Length: 402
Image (tube, rainbow, N blue to C red):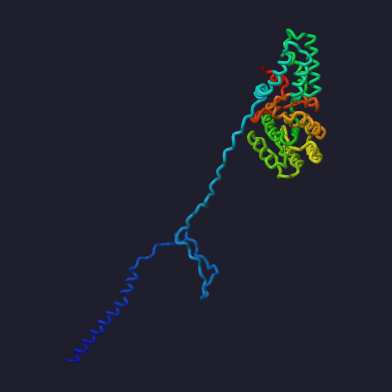
């Protein structure tokens, strides 16, 4: 009996162990079967890029290292655009005055400063008795006004003859004096500026003179005169010895939209003049105005250099106009300057500056007789449009303005 019990317990223990062993083997299989299948990735896998290949970098152990793929889709970054630079608005171009308004100002300005001369002449001629002393006083007045000795003698003789023939009484002295002064100033001279070159090329104007006469300012004002006449202009800054000359000319050009050709300070003036003319030809300009350095008429080297400038220009285009700028207040000294410049560069016209600041208007007559060329322009003040074409009638009328 005891032996039978022992067998039974042994069988039970073995049965329990068998059950436990069976459970250990069957349950994991059941769990694996119950795990859900992964979704079908065949379509999405086709869209993914293939895994990167090893880039050849190795670790200490010698295995290849792949670059880590980005954690997510690469962010598309737009390139930063540099801010657009602010463009300064173009300066508004000035509209120069026309010839008509300049002539009105010519008469007004001259009348305000020159009428002392005219009134003096009228006062002498209106005396009750025109004796020799009166005529000598008249001669002194004319000579003091820089008319010149020869022109003064001629004018006095004509006046004496007319009054002797016509009689002083009942004669309109103002009319007689106006007619004789107008004859002296010579209204028949051609005072027009050459603004049309040969063969369709630009007309070239060379501006010369001594230091301090206002050449560069005159060039700038002359550009305004031509722009008012609807002419296209190029300026040449051939005064390379004065640092401010090119800048000054550039300012004048900017105000009316006229290009300025310049060179380095101290460069050869002839080369700058050459480039200015070439630029004018290329741009099909109407007129090229070349500013030159001021030079003393008694300096042979400087005068020779001026001749060189003219010769270099004429390798491309003939010089149409040579304007000599004279200070009206210099009187007879200006005539000495005029003679030398005329010999070197064949002056074709005169510009008288500061004419409104002096009662010596007779310099107009003197310089014309000395050079045989007309006064073409006169400077009447500091304003931008205070350069006017010279008009003989307006000039004489201003002299005799009451």
